[in-house]
Every structure is written in C-alpha cells, then in structure tokens.
Image 1 (cartoon, rainbow, N blue to C red):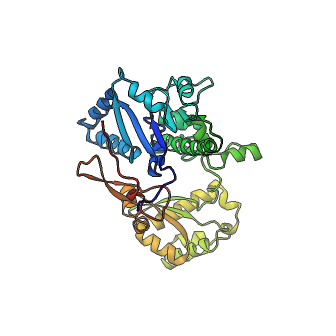
Image 2 (cartoon, rainbow, N blue to C red):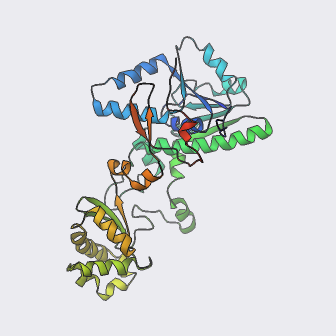
Image 3 (cartoon, helix red, strand yellow):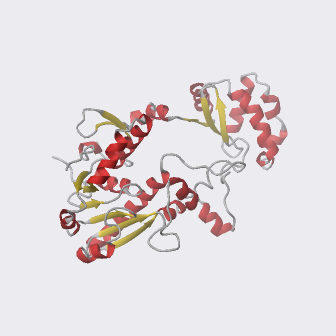
Length: 376
C-alpha cells in the first residue's frame, strides 16, 4: 500500500520559473499535486535552449530545469485561451506566482476568486519599497542580500556563490512560509498572501552576521568569526585542496599536527615548535598567518587528499578535503546513504543523476514522488 505523504490531496498551481520553482518541487516531493503552468511560447523558448549548439549551456539549462521541476505535471496553454487556467485558480490550495511571470499582476483578482488559497508571490525585492521594479539576477541578488560581501577573503573582492544560490534559498524560505500559512488556513478556514523577497531571504541567511551587528554594533567581514587562528584556512595539496582547523582550543588537533610534521622529518617542525605558537593571541596576527602558510604549505603539498585524510583520522586532526563535483558524486558517505538517484527524464530512456531529497524518510522518496513528467 502506498504511503500517504503530508501534502497528499493538496493542489498547487506553479507559475514560477526561477526564484520559486524549487519551492513547489519540495511540496511535490511531499505528495502535493503540483501543476506547472507554462505558455506555449515559454515552452518553445525552452525547447530552443535545449536544442542549442552550445552543449554546456544546453546541458546546464536542461538539468537545472529538470531538477527544479521533478515530480510536477506541466500544463501548456495559449495566452489567448486562459479559461482552463482560471478554473484551476478557483480551486487550488496553493498558488505560487513570480514577478514577471504569468498572472503575477493579478493577485487581487485571484484572491477575490479564491479567498481560501495560499498565494505566495516571489520577487527580487518584494511587493513594496523603492526597488520593486529593479532588474535582478543571481549576482545582483547575492550582492544586495549581503552573501557576496561575506564570501571570500577580506583582501580581495566579494565573491558570488555558485549554482544560483539566490534562487535556492528563496525557494526554501518560500516553502517554509507557505507551509506555515497553510497550517493556519486549515485551522481557521482562511487564505493568506505571502510576500517573499529574495533579498530578504538572503539577508536572513548570513550566518550570524545580523546578530553580530545587533549585539556588538560591528559589521562582519569576509574572514568570518571562525577563521582567526593561523591554522584555520584552505591549503593546496598534491591533488587538490584541504581545509585545516588546528587552534589551541580544538582538542589534540594542534599537538597532533606538529607531531605529524616532526615524524615526517619536515623542517617546518623547527618553526612550529617555537613558544609563540602557544600564544592564542599571537596566532591571530597577520605575521602568524603568513608564517604558518609558508611553512605548512610546503609540507602539505607533498601529500594527496587521501593520504592526508588517513593521517588526519588516525591523529585526530581536524581536516577535510575540498571536493569537486565528480568527487562529491563518488563520495563514500553519500553512497552509503544512497543519496544520489538515477532518474529517467520525460520517458526518454535516458537517466540522469539527481541529488536526493533534503530530508530523510523511512522509505525511498522516489517510490512516492516520481521523476519529472510533463503533459499537454
């Protein structure tokens, strides 16, 4: 017997295309019937991208679209024939709209026709304020939200996080807020309008930067709150990069690291055994950071990531490899958890590797939430 998921029997109309498409996919994975509404013109534009001669762009666009729209059903229509869409609008439990998308300008009309629905409007800067009409993309949203300022090193320019992080975090916040509103709607038999600003979602996800400003009156820097010790950094090794953290306060990590350097017969030991390395304040200075990087970089570059991890685990040194995409796919821990799934796309016979659900069930999520399927 098939399990009943939390949102079984709930109908969601999805008019999103970028910032909110992952939000509705989360509901679809949890049993909701999510109907992705797309005009025939939009489908034609997407088909043109998929048939592009730029292989890299085509693969990225196709895989991103498929990932965000897994478990949904698509309904294509002509803009001149909106009656079928309006009939769905009047009965849906959730309606997700995105600025610039279909029906995004008709919020008041939709609320009059379906007063009990959860209407979630997603945009770069919200429904009010001086920036509501500004153009935006992933780069500008990360800058406006502050996450670019927090990324990278203080001595270089801010960095953009990869893979459309603004869209992903906006979708997560949109899903959580909509779920909370639906809980209230079921109790009180009323609807809600949820205003989701991508900038606000990003600004709310800046580690503890907001609390640091509230409590200390200080603006956090790109060095962060946890990278003060000279050892807390990323270092290049023989086949990639490793993250190290060996401050004095972190158990045996520092002593074990120095012992490893000594056993290896590396000259860095003569530097790291000096008394100033036992002074927590000195280890935070620019001089300490430069000195440690010079000595340790030469030592660690002689080893592979696998060799380093073997030593780190044996000696209880806090180190971690910086993995590329292929290494993530081959990660033994993720494989043990059966995290990645091979899913067929659109009955094409071709299977693509997908990340699993961001939560764990007692049974396989994909036995309940099927891979992407689109129908006219």
